[in-house]
Length: 430
Image 1 (cartoon, rainbow, N blue to C red):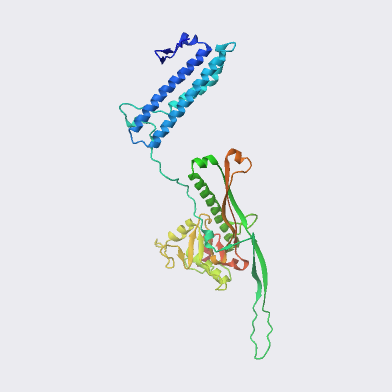
Image 2: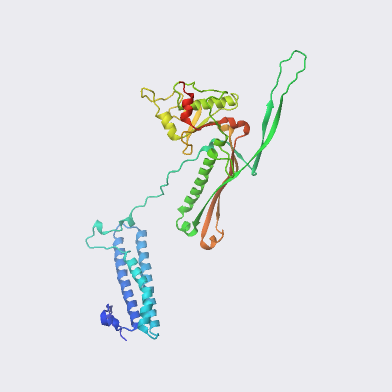
């Protein structure tokens, strides 16, 4: 039977009684033919766009991308036409063909509407007199700047201030002088001496702790965007390095935390009888406080064992107490023992870090601490953890085994001031 929607070899849309008079099989064939006609119109639209793109400065990749969109759209619409035609043929064999087809078609109509909407949004209008505003998808052709702008992150450096002891086992044992008596005597000629000179040695030990992080990622994602693998590696390494930094400065030494500068440091006391500074310094400043802390450390080391070389400060404190400090006449104070770059104070290298608490500072001899290192940062990738293999998920893990060691006899080489403002007041002469 001749299809009423074909006239002069072209598809003609049916309406009203013509459409109602179609059998279920014809109705399926009609919708299929209409979908095919829409596909041909879409193909013509795409082809025109592609030809116009070729006349512009569009890249080969842009033209290929539009061609791929066209092929995908046409493939989906033609496949849909075949499916709807088959539904009509199937419905024609039921007891109530038209009702059956309507029910079957309603289940697929939303998909057809969405398909048309999706495909129509792909195209853009090309006019004979093209104007700039006629292209509303210009961002699709914008130049892409290379790289990714990351959020600010601090640069870890504290662990690099100390020498490293590489380990081949989990634990390190070391020997310290627990007690010592030096009791040389003045005696007369040809007489014996009674002396209590002796020493006691103590064997101590320290264990490494583990610092670990893990990131899960989709394998297909990394395969599609290879640069992300390098970014994931960088992210893991940064995360571990920042944790090491925090632990070396502020770790509690309890549980799974490392020992730290803060843990070993004694608190500055202006009235310490070994080297008192209470109410002694005229118009005391932050630099005077750092000098006083360093002097007490030197004194604790019997003026020869400890030589403070580093001060860790809070940057805002440094600006407030040093760079912006002025005398009573409003003139900036710049002591002659601060170098031109402001990072050296009487032999102390001044470093600042965001993790140094405000109104707090540390002074120490960096040669008296060690980073014990069982294993440098290691990166492992696993593809078969639980059901991750089935889901194409991989896990990348970074971990390190380390700790911070200051031997008991060197603990006095580290000092902190937990209240800079109060300490400056305490050393200032009334």
